[in-house]
Length: 614
Image 1 (tube, rainbow, N blue to C red):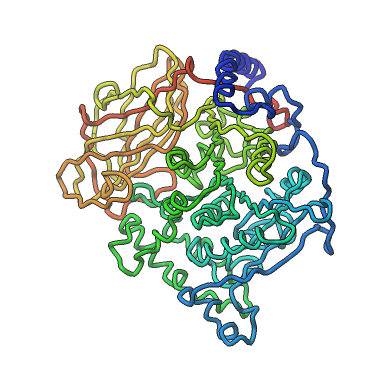
Image 2: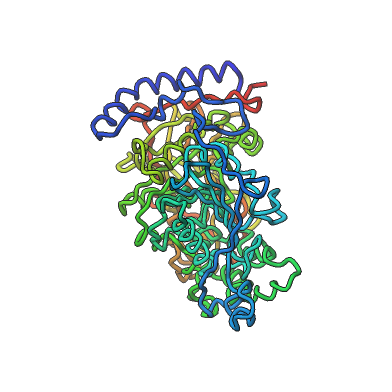
């Protein structure tokens, strides 16, 4: 973005923001919320450090790090975990069962850091739980060393305000024994045991919060499903609500899906020592069956009794809704194609519908933290976030976490606001309650009418040309967001087939990606309901796009391209030609975003070298 366009963007957003401030203040007053914290729409006026490599809190805390015997100020512990014999591995190790060597029994490795508070004062614990501590794929050599990706920031920024911090290695990783169970029951029990241990130490006030990204953003959903009374809040950053939900979308398989268990994570627990024998766990042994079966049947386990229950055991959200009594602060990127955005949306609204206090921070970044300017720049390409850089950088995030944890873990201070913060693909931020918003006006584009087909083949198959539909140029700027739907009549010429839908913003200079959807047609009703597809019989494929928030400028068009696969998805195991049927029942449906009724704001503006225009 040039300096001129940056100033223009700032002016436009400032005007929109000013028009919203009175409404926002009124909402705060009507809701009876305390106003001791500076609200998000006024943080631009605060003295944030906006030149560093990551965010910082506004004011340093009063406590130093409590010194220990090592240079990192950490204490290392092994936590015993009671696993049922059905989990095999360490649970049935002969030396454990016989009582000859208790160290062979199931246990997880944990390290913690404490603030130097007055003797007898108890503090809450923030913990990160995952498979990466002491593994070769990351730079942290041992769990007693704070993770450079998040742990060091928590220790430097939030611990001094009266919080302990901990890191936990899941089974089969780091110094934890047993097998790498890939989010299965054994791993879940280990996570829950660590939370209980941290919540019951004499120096703990009993309140535990979990934070982390990716795998470390998924273990907290595992813990929340138990309803552990010590777990008061979770902050999943690009986390999983379920494993099948990560790797299959409407039956369509990601390229990594068939190999995820044994190839991607299976080697974590194998390092050449005598504990490698503890990797003989049932789900690990059957891992290749799970992956192959998932690809053949689109992740539907009823087709193979050998994998029955595998995916259900690794779907956390239903039990979270039933058992969890804490809060949730979701952080996710619209362009995270490692952990797709449907882990956050519509999860936010589902949590709210169940009475769980939840908020969402969602910007136009990839698989990242929201306060890392260099990473956010380097991993943003045209149509994949770059149009929203540098406005996506959130230097106020660490302060946001401090306010969140102070309320939910220390049980002090004003309650933080629960606004959901959404950034559109041109960089503007706004606050809302739910997302997608309730009662949003919808607009429909019928294929063959508002979405014009220029002619040519309507047949989609592997290697075929795209079947393209395109609007006329918009006379005024058009904004939409949420979870657009494409319900399209198709006639498979085999017993299945697959459809990938790509939405693009186009002008005379080219097109950029704005969103996509995919569906194995055996799941044409949507979700995980397997359907029998008969060759030559027309069906209506009810596709839903992954979450997006889009601005189509005046004079641009919206293009829909249909093909058999795209991004990192595999061809369907039942690949067959599919005939597209335009008409009144083949419709693209989007939620309109009206800027006159939205409430925009400017966050603290990035002045890091990565953000400075060339």
